[in-house]
Length: 114
Image (cartoon, rainbow, N blue to C red):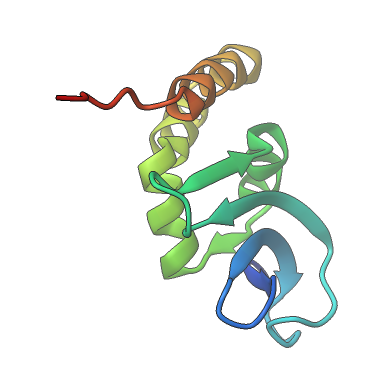
């Protein structure tokens, strides 16, 4: 069974994670099938970059996200778009929507100076 899960990268005390598709039996930082995105919890707000077309493909073929990855997908809106894909919307439209949402999330946050 294939799981979509996190793979830790980065220095000690400075974690960054890759979102990968891997066999359920493979170790956390061991062999994997494909890199699907990156998650950096150290930035404010957390940086999430996903290849949604590949994520949809893996999930259509039965891959299950772990709890932590499902929470990241929920934050990014990927799970909602995947449900809409299953109901019949086109993948191209959903991927375009995801790109627009990612650009909006990546926009710098303006702070007020007194």
